[in-house]
Image (cartoon, rainbow, N blue to C red; front, side, top):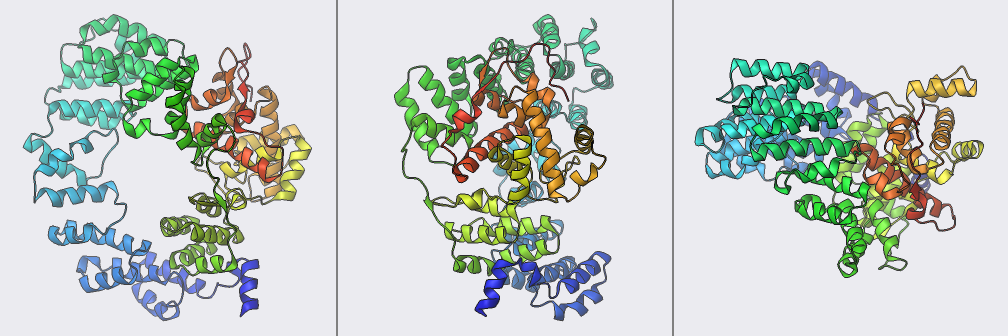
Length: 636
């Protein structure tokens, strides 16, 4: 038995645990076809399969409208604390709500973990029957710029009936919807407002078709609240592309608006300008009072101030944020940096000390600000064979690996994420090592990243595909630590990764990029780079990375941004003068690209350490971003 166990640790589990997989897939197909007799016939052969609880779940879900209370209760007890039980409970609650069995609903509600918005609104329907004060306490749910589930509608109707929500709240949500780009919801909100008319609907359609022309029309009405909301909508549309034009129009029109609306308009324009790194952004922010700026707008004011290195304005913006935003790592870091620049060192040091004990981009920068020997380092821990074996025996882990073995990574990810959420550090590292041996690197990385006191850099920063990757790094003269850091962020070393926009493979290459690289290399075959061919994918991706690195003055920060968002954007985001790398990164307009570059650069530092390189700090690696080249558009 010991020999079999050691073999299982060396070879992927899918070679040893395929028994019953065919029957399970047969049962799954039968469920999808509604062939319940076939499912029942397969049950005896599936009782020992790791995914058998799903077969039971599917059978129970098919009967929930019959209210099989005892069967539901037994299932929930049998799989208590596991993902399958939470899934059944969520579906059971929806059935109870549909049947208006609110007492039973509330009895089961507290055991549900992570309810979605639909279920949260169903719970409010139940709660309001007992206490109408629930409506006032949950008024904030109304103010969303996105569509909400149908289950929320009856709650909102009750809020209107009781006077918790009023006509002004309809217009406020319409504005939120328009700001979020949800024109359909915005129109629906305005049409619900009591002051809305057919003439207002025509005005809105005109503003949607050509917002610039709408604002330029001398007959533009601003007398009613509806007319003013349409004008603000048109202003936001113009500002998103041409903030200077919007500012010119608003300078002319804003006198016809209330002070609140004037300041709201300047806030819209200022954010649009800050996103485009306009030098006028801070001037326009000053025309919008702090009380009129929401959390996102305050963040953009802080970014605009960072670009100008206006440390007083950076600090003022951060301190004006709500705690939820102010306490984010990025703003804690820049608050500390601002305090230091303003000569308030004693206030900055405790902030940096707390940050330095965390594990992320800004934690590394904070640690470097403080210098060496800041607090105890996490303890290195290498999981034992017992740790790995214990992880493999956790039911949720076994189910996740079974899904993974069947090629159903999405389902496997759900099981894995649920199961590891409350594990201790030793168990997390045992599970991470198990995932690594399976070649499931994304789970190995994410699981090892969750530890608090113990750490294992080899699991957080694995190094598969070494032969291919290092060969291409040498061929194209690219730093292999940076290359590993980029691939870790791009695909988590999943060679079969496919993005929603068509990027493929380890380095997430787009078909157009693959064609372009093939032409540059004089190759006819470009499809292998976007198929499951690691060597070709690494070769094409590394060539392209080197190309943008050279094109962007040898800056790995710019090249990383270009790899994610395109060279032209990375070039446009540069300033007219050299800029600290951390400021460039934290003022990138796209959230995805900001996070991407942070992680790629932080990853590269960790990989360099793993490779035994001379200790290079993150601050040194990101360095200074060179000034924008006059007339350069970044190329292709």
